[in-house]
Length: 141
Image (tube, rainbow, N blue to C red; front, side, top):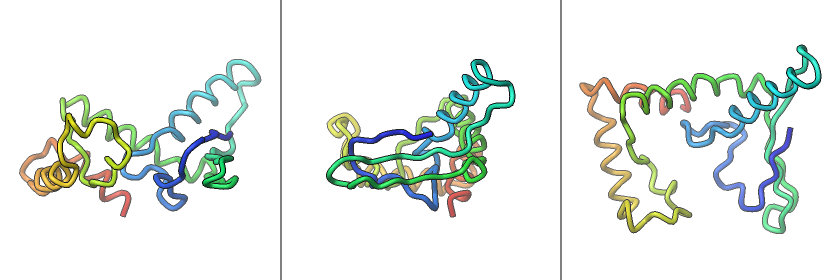
């Protein structure tokens, strides 16, 4: 299964498909397509792989691909994200580069300041509510 992208591949990494929960499309798309395939084609139908295809001039046909075994950890990533949201936590990024192409800078403020504040919060081990975020960060290492 391929997701065609018109822009840059900068945020996608073959070695780290989820980027600490920053990229969840592969997991969501595989689940949705597999569900439809089982309903419409066969109860035994499966998705074998997922990839991003960049046909534009900038990336010149680059493909980044994973098989479903490589993406199996996506369910755990989604579980951490759901746990974080369920607790009402909406911590900003700990990496200012996540804000590189964002249109909301005037709302959030300086990305370096926001990222530094998040890093400080995550370093507070006594705040158990942040544990799912710490696990996402640890799983990526």
